[in-house]
Length: 107
Image (cartoon, rainbow, N blue to C red; front, side):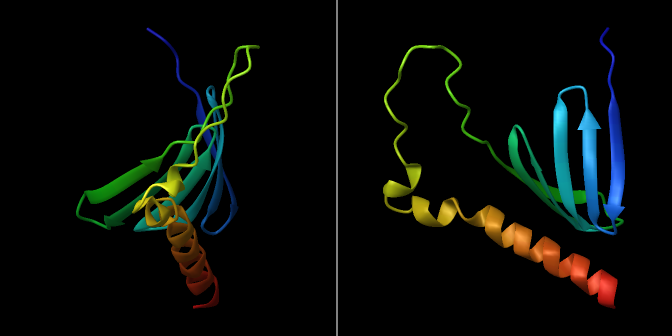
């Protein structure tokens, strides 16, 4: 059985640094909405507080090739029709998270 390690450090209200044995990530948000950015990509979570209901979506980051052999450049997935809007969901989630943090700080 393996061991786990996880530590969350609160920097500001709504901003956390997450440390684990697999890496470091940053979370922005508050009760009901979180945006987490780390080595494995971006995760946005939205939920209804107190109900146990939530929705999470992931966006995996592209990993650089690990071998020393040259490879062809990756095709830009936004070039296909309809993919331009899919790649920008994280920006909306980030803006919503920042707006929430500001609302909690000023309100």
